[in-house]
Length: 507
Image 1 (cartoon, rainbow, N blue to C red):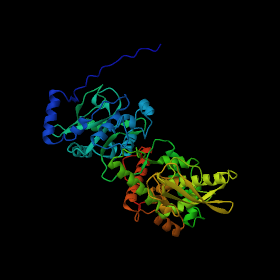
Image 2 (cartoon, rainbow, N blue to C red):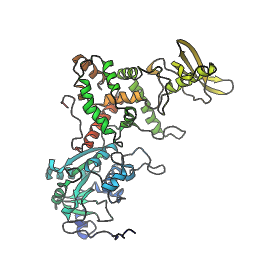
Image 3 (cartoon, one colour):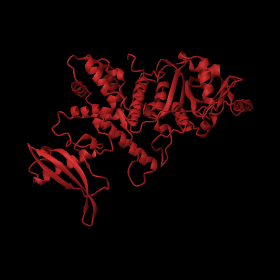
Image 4 (cartoon, rainbow, N blue to C red):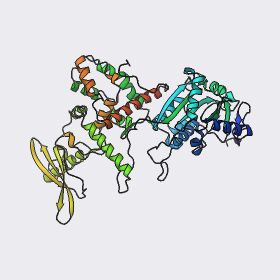
């Protein structure tokens, strides 16, 4: 039988150095700071404040409080119909079981904040000064659009425990004290501490990383968020993809026999990791919210329209056309291969036509023997039975071509569409070619500096340039580029520099 573990009901707050928020002295500090205008950030924080649900969830709880205080929409449900940040939803950078067992590092909290749609500035204490901390803190507590999360060691305050995260709720300039809104409310209440001591508590080493702790500023993004693609770091396979992009790809580009774009893309596609398809789908993850059904709100309809528009803009790029040709160069029939859940309507129509051709042959010829060159969707008026959808296609088998018309049992009043060229595809979700195209566009321009052939380098840099992209797609690509850079930095626990270098800088 396991030995019984003694239970605890809170701890006595060591004072000094801390001042209990609810004490007469704590109330006085609050009133004076409020009058001075350095408690503005307190109110949105306290309105959504929560206690960490696990002893090691201080980083997750602090971040959930700050994200909700900033009114950032998580874009996915928490419970019932409600969208709301909760610790259980902050799992993209580290598995919750691992956080529950080991806690979370400074870099991973910054990564989580970024992946959750916030703007993040993070600072290791050994790279800035106490004056920098004071300046940033005053800016945050004097407004409601920025909050500071501190990563510190409790020992400096004579408290039990080790590394901890908590939001800072206010600042008293006269006493130079900061208000720690401790998310471990089962242990210590909110308390004021001297800023000098907080600085010293930040200037400690996290034994799990060997890096100094610090603080981060979390605010709403000023740039438009991604409408379709986002970067996730849930899967450790990201490390192999990062190695491919950072190490393998630059070496591949130095090959002597790469003298045209088609050869370059062909080599790139051939050298992708064995699990590249699933890896790319994961790296550039498609946000699939509740789209479809009769209850779409006006906002959701507008978002869905924007998604489809961005997808079409991807397919209108010259890069997509080249990647499409290279990806399918060795396939006997690119339209009629097996379907996945994210296939375009065109691919579905092609499969239907191949199935129809096989049926018309009396199933003497298997479906795989047919290749559908062209499909067309038409809405026709049936006798007294409303609109019906007909899929027409040109199917080739053993050199002979035949036309096939298939009547679908269920129809949609949408307009007719043909795929005689890539521009006319009707699509709702990206295909693998879409995702690969977007990933190539999102990789930093410095990635391609190693191409030896100067003419090819210039041509390819023009191909992946964002200068001539439509505004919606350009925002999408630049957003992804920032995310990819930030994710790489966070994987290396170096999250201070969240901005990618300019294209003119050498990588």
